[in-house]
Amino acid sequence: MDITPDQEPYIQELSRDWYHGKVAEVAMLRLDVIHQHVSGNKWYKLKYNIAFCRDHGINSILTFGGAYSNHLAATAAMANISGLKSIGVIKGTYAEKELTPTLRFCIDNGMQPVFVSHEDYARKYDNDWLAELSVRFNNPMFIPEGGANEYGRKGAKEIAGLIPERYTHVAVSVGTGSTLCGVVDGVGDNVRILGFAPMKGGKYLQEEISRYTDRRNFTIFDDWHFGGFGKHTEELVLFMNEFYKENNISLDMVYTAKMMYGIRQRIQGGLYQPGARILCIHTGGLQGNTSLKDRLEY
Ligand SMILES: *Cc1c(COP(=O)(O)O)cnc(C)c1O
Image (cartoon, rainbow, N blue to C red; front, side, top):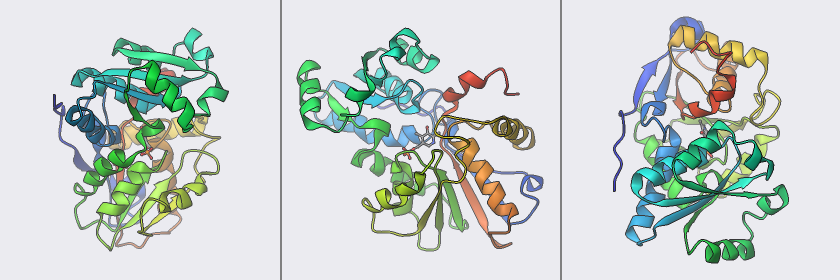
């Protein structure tokens, strides 16, 4: 069954005050509005995976993630809506005793959780282990952690089709880099893609992503990790509240808040020409804000 979006994505210009009018335009591509539970880039990354299952008569999906993973939550929801069974291999046996809101959501959406130690989880690309899991769960479709496969990149390429030609730069946050890769492949020659990595040492992604595309129209920044993946500082929370007040857009703590912080700092540093038009992709992920909810003013 095809699932219908709640709302089509659209472009929202940001308040000129927020970027002090230093460039011609800064806007957000609101992928976060697509679906309440399969929001943002996950919608695009999962759609061809789901279609593959449908076309090949596969009735279950097995994937991997941590206890706060947007990918797990989106997969559980999309599988549920599409009438597929889902199995989530979850990093950390502690997670079984301390179910996070993300994991609760997954289980409520019919995902069968399989809690494994960090050592076992590290074998997520090991063919012997995958073969064991395949037998145990009756030949499910395997989707790698973060939805990082060819179907994910194929779906992400459609995001480029939503980007009007006037933009000179596109900013996107990067986890596995599948979304960025799709966008990099789909945009015209005059656009520069700016990838913001939310973890320490994310620069390695420049090389990693270069294995999947011949284009070199992108740069990865890893200066705005705020302590590491999933970590935040008080300053970031203040920034999120201020961004909401000025632009009426909720950002997520793990990805999009760090990207917007980074892009504003770069704009204020005069790194873009006054004529630049920058489109920032809102990749969704708002479910991950649950742990901050008492400190967010939205
Ligand atoms: C998953 C996710 C990303 C990272 O996407 P990749 O394709 O793995 O790079 C970025 N932003 C949000 C909000 C996400 O949930």
